[in-house]
Image (cartoon, rainbow, N blue to C red; front, side, top):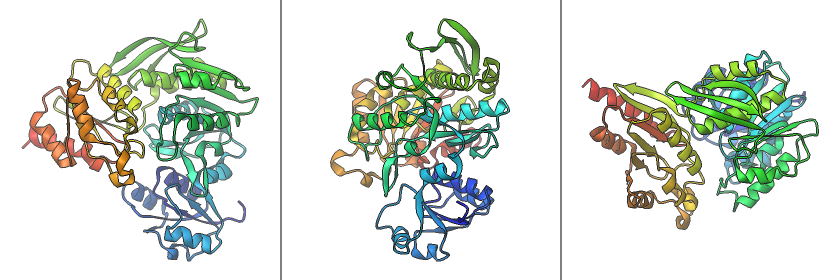
Length: 471
């Protein structure tokens, strides 16, 4: 990397790409970028970092002839800037490979993989290492409230990274997490996802097997055996293994859970021995599971129960994970990233446990590459069980899913109604807000769920509630 000074990043506004841009800039590289949609908060972050960027993809964006081009995985052949990069013979690499080459070499890489819980688990591990004075580096898929960032370059030996099984780039179709040099790793869960690149669960399972084989003999694998697919996956691994979960067969178990609006108290057992009593401000059994996996890994790294307790107790969470957007009178508006049916179900259960007795609205946008398709059409019916009122928004960019396999909000609303639920499909966020305003009551909790911006509906709801309260 000594010969590289100028780096250009195509599709710089992706969550990972913009974080890597900030890391590279702080390391002294000259960074430029380009993207089709440049808007806050990423544009604000890039401006603050002093990173110039081009709006739109054009061959002229490369006229300064960078020493290296980093290509985001949303890019494909036919893109004019990508074609110019190839025509000019510019050295290029993917985001995962660049992260590995620039920052993971020589580090103890801690990779958190799995269908659910990666961001929260990665964030709490990074924060606990920070609290213990170990000055870790990290990159996760959300803004951590403790660090006010989704990345950090520390001087310590640990680098915590969220390990995604999505593909790497148009020229490298292997999963991102195969590039991350895992020495310690967590597998939280294993379900079918990413229907745009995987045909079935077996294909995903095989990639996780490849991931496990990268862990060295002196490393550590921590696995959630509450998930039967994970339990089967790790039965014959040849690396040190620690298991966790609520299951009696898990080595690390959480018991005596007590929920309140402040958070969750629980006791952790290692085998038959009490490891410690813990508190987390996060809500829900699934987040206790995330904390439990973190504890097992951190203990494997040598941290004491007291050091881990401090990290968990002071962990403030991650933005867009059951995040409080606003409280107007006695009405609460929350925002969450949930989009997979399991995540929707667990999130609703968590919110219900934290706010018992309150009426719960669920406003859901089908937005991811998977839930634009009808692969989980039936599974979503059971996912909304805990919600009292359910609104399904339009599919975001439906044309990106083949017409014959496209998800149907109308069908989901009909199926939910048939199950006795108060559900409907409403087009347009302004129309959804208007519908809520006509029916909302004191004490209601309104939960918005989407893995994207959802047209700013969260803020629109809070603004509308303030207007109704103070016309």
